[in-house]
Length: 379
Image (cartoon, rainbow, N blue to C red; front, side):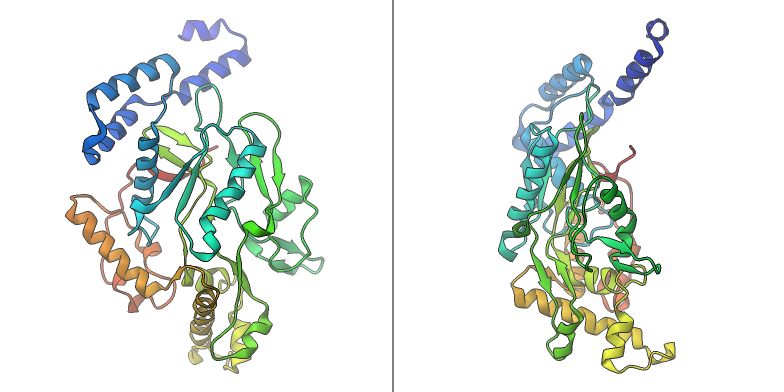
């Protein structure tokens, strides 16, 4: 092989080396196939399937999952997600197989369809849409957004930021790609940036009916509505690769539903995000001159009360951190009973509000790296 590569022009040698690097590791494929058959006794002869996979890899440098393998792999990747507290319902993940979709336009249409179906008029359903994997011959498509729905951040001339500070750089990037921007407000939905396996990037503005948003009110403070806060209903992560049996599906947006604290204690509360605690504290008349007044704690609780109240009033699925902590321990018990290790990153599993008041706080967890898995892109 080395002699052959040397005889090629430099560009061809690089292409061949890239092909070699993208060839599937047959050991990873075998581990997954054995796992699939071990947990699905009715799947058939594991040895026959292993022979099929080995022949495919030898011939093409890759192999194709059956739908059943894809579905199982996606669900187990959620089961293995050590940073996710909401894995109790991993078996219910709905898998949309869109491996035949390769064009940027097709990916855009399916991402919009994903949001519409997952939203379910407020009854959020855990969903994943899987597009083609990377292969030795061709890269799969990618969505360059971290999540399908995120809000723009605009840097003003005086250095202040309107919108989400986390996405200032991304907002400037999509503007350079041709996005004209929204209304210049705090909650302008960013367009999707889609990179197909071949061809030019595509900007896709999400239609309004694909983005359900919840305006925030408070059960006890009518003035809260005047703050003009809101958030989208579906947290659909789109910037991670779904790894199953050595295959990387670089475009596999997936969603569950929100835990209230993700919005109320992070997105709207963090100082490098919307930083709303000083605003809420001022309206509550709290003493912000000293930390000993615990003004942040008071404001944080009321902000989270508003988030939970508003989603409930809107009929949109959401859970609170106490309920989700108990559900996670139920999941943990089930996994241990099944003889499986349940990866868990303590710093992510413990909620960002009242952590010590939840049951997940008072113990340690194993956090091995298992596959299938969701991983960040390496390129």
